[in-house]
Amino acid sequence: MRSTCERVIGTRKAEEDKGALMADRLRFGPAGVPPSFRAMKAALSDVPRLLRGEGLDAIEYQAVRWGAKPQIKREDAEKLGLEAKKNDVWLSLHGSYFINFCGGKDVIEASKQRLIACATAAEWMNAHIVVFHPGFYGKRPQKEVFRNCLEALKEVVETMRTLGIKNLNIGPETMGKPSQFGSLDEIVSLCEGVEQTQPVIDWAHLHARDRGRFRTVDDFRRVIDEIENRLGTEAVRDVHCHFTKVEFTDKGEKRHHTMNEAEYGPDFTVLAKVIAEFKLKPVIISESPILDVDAIKMRDILQKELGR
Ligand SMILES: [Zn+2]
Image: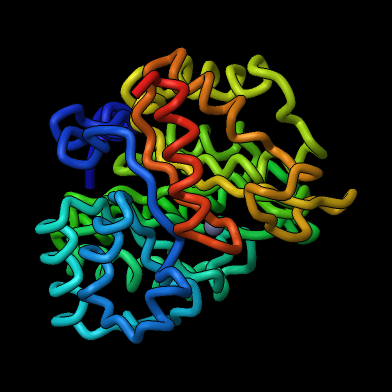
């Protein structure tokens, strides 16, 4: 049992731990295996090389339907990890959708198991981060939900440590519906309170949750400023992001759209200006319906902005 004092110190991430986990440069990639790779019946271990061929250098493996155990063989996960390393492709893993840290005791316990299963497989892959959706408020008061989330996440990280999973961050994601736990403030607060975590900024989700909040450069700047002020310069510089255009209603996120659909936001060219201005080097995962195609489009927009 650690003392209270150690616990407080432990809430801030150790800088040397973070070094290995943070992105080394601006990177782009798809959320999952692109449809064109599937069409050519590519094996999972071929995916990093194929992404390299497209000039992409990240991928978020989708473990979104997993239960209490990893649903990938250890040897397949390790093979993917080796190929990713060989091709300099940054690996992250999107955790199970069946996680709810805002529910009753049994739901929270099962959710912890699922997140640990995701972390276990992520470690086999040598992935850098496990992204997850914290849950739904239900009828519980917001403060209680936050407390439960924080405790559950601390316990997950402690279990990871006893399992020897150290070079992996857990990334709670900003969510697209007001009924979901996951405002920017809540996600940053979780990361302030739990070590071995980093915020995952889903720009489309924030846009939908707040009914179209991103229009000007300042709208994007405010998010960057808040992360920097609360979690530090390094946390914001290497921030892990999801991006797609999104359709929303009063209930928040409705559908993802492609970069070509001008009627939907947010506009990546505006975010690109802010990334260039702050000299950020995020990992940007495309969640567009045409995953890799739009990842390439975003990469090209940003390179133009950077004058490359
Ligand atoms: Zn997500």
